[in-house]
Length: 373
Image 1 (tube, helix red, strand yellow):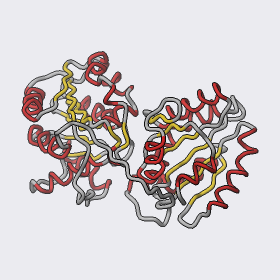
Image 2 (cartoon, rainbow, N blue to C red; image 1 turned 180 degrees about the vertical axis):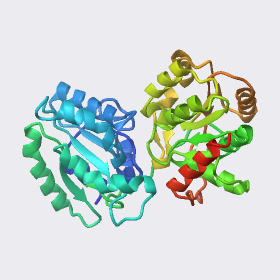
Image 3 (cartoon, helix red, strand yellow; image 1 turned 90 degrees about the vertical axis):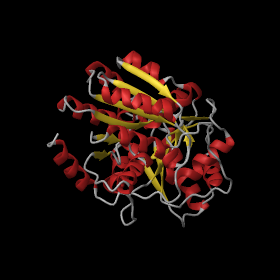
Image 4 (cartoon, one colour; image 1 turned 120 degrees about the horizontal axis):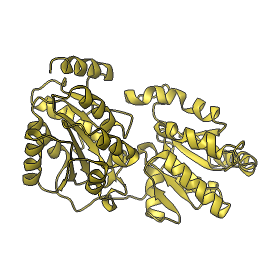
């Protein structure tokens, strides 16, 4: 189905979301139509943030907003849906568009398997009426579903279009880029060299995939690394938990701007805990690149100032490899909680692979390695 037709059927004029590769046609269409326009389209920090934004829009206008997200974000909407939107509370109607990663019977990555199994059940348990859009769904079927949604929405209930892989299409191209020159894979290569045998916790998406391939190319095993293949925004908290319990070992966290924004409160907890052995590196390309390149608000956010305000002992920003290497060396050889923000370009190798070990194998190998240091 053409995404423009789905949007016509829904008839909304305000969208808030977190980008998803399965919803890339929708994301690209919204970017081409509105860009980032606070009156019509906002890419928010996380899915709960989107839901609250949309609630505010409804309160101000009386209109029905749309929230789009990958199904991994359902956990982030449970609280506002259950305690804010629900018709037993404020009865705030909205439409969710949910990319169905890990759909049963469709091959996907391990972090999506269980989420895919419970996607519809979670929505139904929250009282959200669903309609699944697949490759063979007709415009007439989608329109009928929307007509069935309308009486529910008028009563302050919520509804969701759940989108299967390849179900939506969009013909126009959108190019996402910035003016930074450093490539993420090269940045990670410099980090691994500086870290030597120290443990590394890497964030979800292409950063972990690149770290895995760098180790392979170096002839190294993967025991030093914990790949946070799912649970976006939580790698720094995992690193904190390790750092507290391995105080005599440098712990490195490779994070992304979208992940930092998603659960920024973690930085306050890290700063308050102030582990002297934690090195927090935020690779900032201002984009949700792993799911298509749509922008984050990180280019307008002073991440280093936030880190300082949260209590990080040292917080710096670099945009070239000479400065990066100097800061990595200083972090490796010094002490004190440190954040290094690295300005990064958008883009990755077209032949970038995925980890060839299972998540369980990664965990066991990493835990075994931690016991040796």
